[in-house]
Amino acid sequence: MAPKIIVIAGPTASGKTALSIALAKRFGGEVVSADSMQIYRRMDIGTAKPALEEREGIPHHMMDVAEPDEAFSVARYVELASRCVDDILSRGKLPIVAGGTGLYIDSLLSGRTFAPFPTSGWRERLQERAKSEGITVLMEELRRIDPEAAERLHLHDEKRIIRALEVWHETGKTISRHNRETKAVPPRYQGCRIGLNFEKRADLWRRIDRRVDEMMAQGLLDEVKALLRGGIDPKCTAMQAIGYKELADAARGLAPVEQAVEEIKLRTRQYAKRQVTWFRRNGEMQWYLWSSEPDFRRALQFATEKIEESGIG
Image (cartoon, rainbow, N blue to C red; front, top):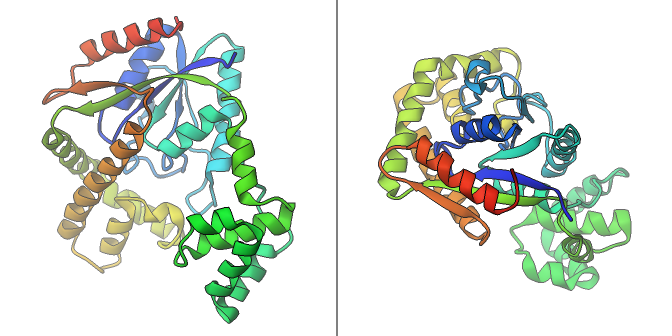
């Protein structure tokens, strides 16, 4: 049987960090972050990374494991995070996976493997062919090799068309077959999933706006400027994160700071909606909905009951 772990998920600003720490103290656990931006060093304020004193002595894993200009993937997350989870379990502790990146959480629990990254230059050759011959030619090639994948993809999705073809050339196996084989594998971990959200969307929106204002007061603009001074390319993936992209533009004089702050609030609300949509698709998620403000005492009681019902504790 797959080892049992706890998952605390939900949209940004929904209280995941505080509840995960409270549960770790109650159950003798350690927290494993499932946040696609907290992995980066020197990106602390804008990612809402809990400071050492906020962690209350609870070990936190999968934070500060990559440089901002370093390529990072869900495959690498699963590789590193599963090592953390296995180590926590081996020491008789309870892993508590907490975060808002649904793909990271689902991939970690399923134990999903990923097709190898190219090593012999196929990606570059296919990219050159897309430029010289057009993506339509590559799509026709994919239809012959893997009609199932071609049916799922749109001509505008050049990146995934190339990815499907490179997997075929690298492994001799279609990406559709690889995905089917992966889904057939039993899950690596059994998660007791607790979801946090607000009863009324307006309350979450207010909490998000307040958090952005607090980040600005804590020095988010200075954090962004320090990254730019340190040579981080404003176009790299990490700097496209909400908060960093807008303030990088402001720091370079491309937009007023006040306008950037309002854009951060808007984009964060939009992101929160997408997070909720993702997590609601999972029927195993047990939701605790806050009223106007979080009540962690009641949430801790709710989560404790669900965890004990699942056989943990």
